[in-house]
Amino acid sequence: MKRIRIMLVDDHPPLRQGLAELLRMQRDMTVVGEAHNGEEAVELVPSVKPDIILMDIEMPGRFDGVEATRRITAQYPYTKIIMLTIHTEEEYLFEAIKAGAKSYLLKSVETSEVVDTIRVVFQGDTRLDATLATKILDEFRRVSSQPRSSGTDFIHLTDREREILRLVGQGAHNAEIAAQLGIAEKTVRNRLSIIFDKLHLNNRVEAALYATREGLTTRDLKDKPNEGNP
View: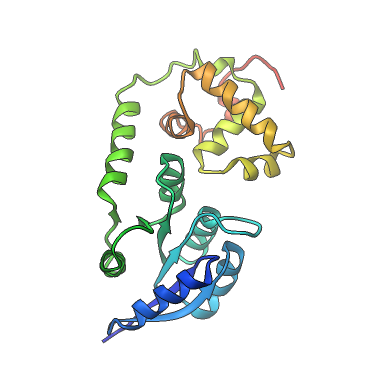
């Protein structure tokens, strides 16, 4: 029997220890590595070659679990990632799925569900908590039902706001956007508020869906006219 090779990524040692003990009790699973943050996880993957990673979202270090997921899935597509977190906010859910996570579980779930999800994801399927799945489906339905923009709203965005919107659509966090554009994180937050107002959006998830629906994540931003503002 091939054992499922699992890596644990969480900054709380007691949680990692508990998960490791649970997984080692399974005849078809083995824990091949542990990391306490996203940066360490990315560095460890090539040496331990996990089939599955249980990944937390908020951890210390240069980047969080979502960014670690994005980097790992890009470099090591054979590795499947399950987010295991306390966060129920749509923003985290949406960004984790966009980054390549195959499942998103809350730490409050029964341990049996964690084990079952590992087996399901290992077989190539995807699993989401029913409540979380409903949230993301409802958001997609709501935004998809809106007519595609003719560019009237988009034209009122400045070049900087367009770039921020594009990065949001790619799943970037505020800190990542700030670092990439060379501006303060507070500036990113302020600009996002302006973007929401100009495009009549309510939150970051809607902004990401808008950017994706309008093709802004892949389109050259020069394709659309603007006001010439910075």
